[in-house]
Length: 161
Image 1 (spheres, rainbow, N blue to C red):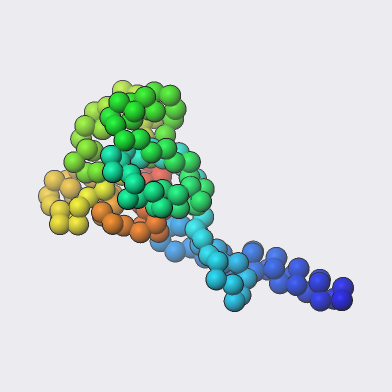
Image 2: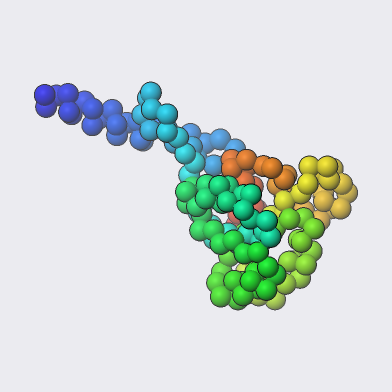
């Protein structure tokens, strides 16, 4: 009986240690073989401020960012966003592309290290010149949790000293 328990403990610890995989900038872990649970881990947890006036549709996405290790704050008005920026430090600011210009001007004077802006672009405007000329990195509307995690990780990597 002790041998079975020791073998099971060894297999569980090996599964936890050896089954991590990196894909698209996020860490994915699987709990043992045959188990259906898997999740994402952020390699560089960040404080994320999300400006979303229609947040109800994306609540599951933001909950996934939290489970991955990011500290996420969601605001739905420009005033709430300004208050959040004054009250704390954020690494990443996620907002719709149309709101991005106004948000860039609001964040320019907030602190020595302003948050990196990660705009969410409608799919039909993905190849628009104003998108690629203003932002090296952006998310497409309807992006998956993995794509959000990848975008946040890439933005943090670009901003690293």
